[in-house]
Length: 217
Image (tube, rainbow, N blue to C red):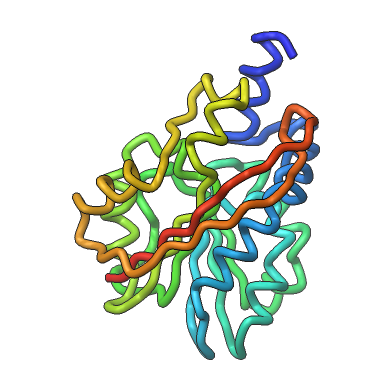
């Protein structure tokens, strides 16, 4: 892939759009599904809870979220209008029953009231946060006391070898993310690292280490 192709891929990974965006979202869902399911499982969701996800993509994983416990409500936020539309179309049976809601946001301000969510999770979005402190403070604001936030990300030593991450990605390792969290009101209550073999966005098979940080209000 030449530089133009890599920049286009990086832009699509940040905010899918157009025909290529639909294809990218399917690829992201397939490539990231283990990370997503891990982040969900680590939330230890309970009956009747309200769950928020930031950056849900096409959200083909929604049935897995809702089957964790009984009487759950899911909210999904996206900066991509295309992903918002795709998620609504794919999951119309849940939106029709009002067990799932999908909204657009600007990547900074979370459009919900204080102390509303029991659990929050986000997978492979942290690289694109324009203002990490503001977004973390927003997540702290909307989560209930004792609520848990899971941030799942691929480790810097893996990501930095992918050619497209030089275009608009901010990479993290455990130390860098912990420093960021230490500047917030969240308390780090656990972390778990996994390794898997995946097909990269450039098409080759690679070993990927990813980590879920669990934070509590």
